[in-house]
Every structure is written in C-alpha cells, then in structure tokens.
View 1 (cartoon, helix red, strand yellow):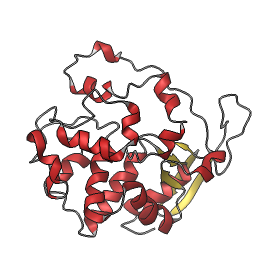
View 2: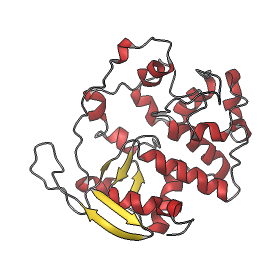
View 3: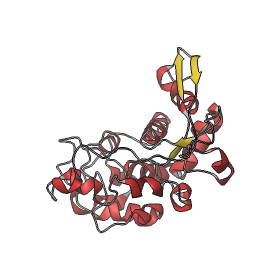
Amino acid sequence: SIAVDIDGETVVDIWGGHADRAKTVPWGQNTIVNFFSCTKTLTALAALIAIDRGAIDPFAPVAKYWPEFAQNGKQDIEVRHLMAHTSGVSGWQVPFAIEDIYDWDKAVDHLARQEPWWAPGTASGYHAVNYGHLIGEVIRRATGKTLKGFVRDEIAAPLEADVQIGLGQADEHRTAEIIPPPPLPIELDALPPDSPAYKTFAGFPPDDNTAMIVETAGWRGADIGGVNGHGNARGLARALSPISLGGKA
C-alpha cells in the first residue's frame, strides 16, 4: 500500500498484490500488516506529544522518570538520547529470549540493569527492537499510560488513523502474512562479538524463523514499540500528518 499526503490532502491512496504467501487473497483497501520499524515513528510521536504537554523533558535524565535505569553507568542518559538512538543501550544483553520481549516488566527491568555499550550521547547505534521499551517505560512512568495505550488513545483514536501497536484479535482477519526478507549483506556471526551491532541483534537475529514469529499470538499481543506496529500506508500517513502540518490534521 502507498499513500501520499500533500499539505493535508490525500493525493495517492493505492494498494495491490496479495495478502497471503500462497497468493490467493488479494490485498484490500483495509488490509493491514506488521510494519516493523515504522512503529518507531509512532513511538517517537507519542514521546513528542508527552514532551509538548510538559509531561516529559527531553533533556532530563531518564532516571528522573525511571529511577532504576540509573544502574551501571546510565545515570546521565537523557530522554533525548533514547529518542535519537544514542543512549548506548541499543538492545538486550543476552541471555535474553525473544519471548522475554513480550513480558514488559521483565524486559524493562533487564534494560535497567545492564551497562551501556558505548559512551551515551557520543555515537548513534540503531535501537532496533528495544526502542519502544525504552521510550515506552518513560512514557508509562510520566503519564501512567502504557505505550500501546498512549498510541491508541492519543494518536489513533482522535485522528481515526488505522494504526496500532500489537494487533487486536478483531483485526486478525484483515492482516497480511509476512514473507521473510532476503538475508542481510553480512552474517551476524561475522561481526566481533563485543561490537554493539552484534550485541543488538544477538537476542533477535534477523532470519526466516524470526520473521515468522511475528504471526504468533505472543508477538501480536505484546507492546513492542520498536517493531510490532500494525496498519497500512493510509493509516501511517494519517497518524504522522500532524508533524508536517504544524501540529494539526
């Protein structure tokens, strides 16, 4: 699906292809799909809304809202470092299973206890899967709402945008299946084990089996603001349009 919005006017809204691997179900107007890292845009927007309302200070230490996060040299990491992928905490320190990601309290406690993998604020490293847990816990502590709840109530509902973190059972019938992506240009095992890139993906290797996990009930029911958002191009364009329209839609 492709959608283009110019100055608040939808000028392109098209879709095509198939919604299943067997190519028997056409992709429809309201087909949705797990859109992986596009979820991060909703997570960032949720944080920006909380910042705009004065609930969160982007220049404040994360520990102001989440005291446990100050452990092991993370006391000076600021909220903006999480949002900009510069915190040094770009993944979960293994051992940590994919299923552990579904348990919010266990996942954020794990992040709170580990050390940063580089000096916070000095370099950027993609927070591939844990982006939503880091920012989401700050949002939860500051506003009392879970990340998926905040996105639902403060973005999707008021804008009538067809996006959600996770997937409600009522929408499973219109959700497209996933085709695993081609292999990465470099094998994970070819990286030095102490490199941030290796550590980031060690608990969530980007392979065929991992791609299939996104169709399980555990994945769909979880709050993973880095990668398990669902929707389509129209929904994302609607949800994110206030950014390009000066705060309005």
